[in-house]
Length: 238
Image (cartoon, rainbow, N blue to C red):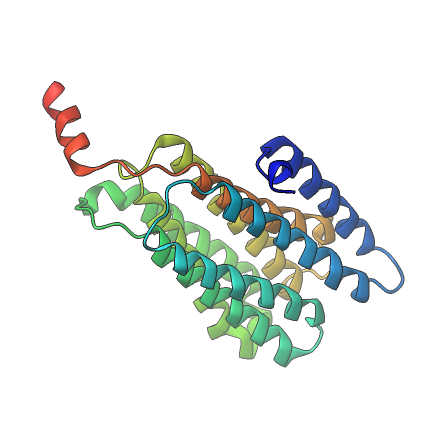
């Protein structure tokens, strides 16, 4: 079992097979019971893969585990999204999960605000566009949705700030994950509050969310911290 989960190709094949089954089940007459199983299987595969393959233990890994647990519970709760209370509960669990991921990605590193301006401009435009599309239909959901989007952007900011603190492979895997996660969030919000018949939303939301978690796990498994003395040496060599 352990040798199987040490092979990234085998685990990826298993993960995407279960993901395909989960997406297909969504279109069945009574998807709920089976999807509790497929979603649990998907996250179990990722969690066990992380535990088996994470070589460099990080003092903040506990925040990843807590965040992952909140995502897991939130994912199951959101299967009952037609109930407004459970929809808010699931969204709240996702927000908490994102905040714990944000703490996991945080590093004590100096940075210049000017270097973050392009990031803030893109984020501002993204938030304005999404809110313009859904504003008229948000009603009581306005504040929860704004908080949810803010949590997503905070996660993106701290993932971006990992640059030069970790190896490039880990940095890019997690940045791609964050971008794909934003795609999942956007599709879910637009489908819920703009167009309930949004094309392919049943496929895209789950596909993007699964890829988000998959790439986060890969990024953390590949993570190698760059020590400050290494950075000083590199700077001096120029």
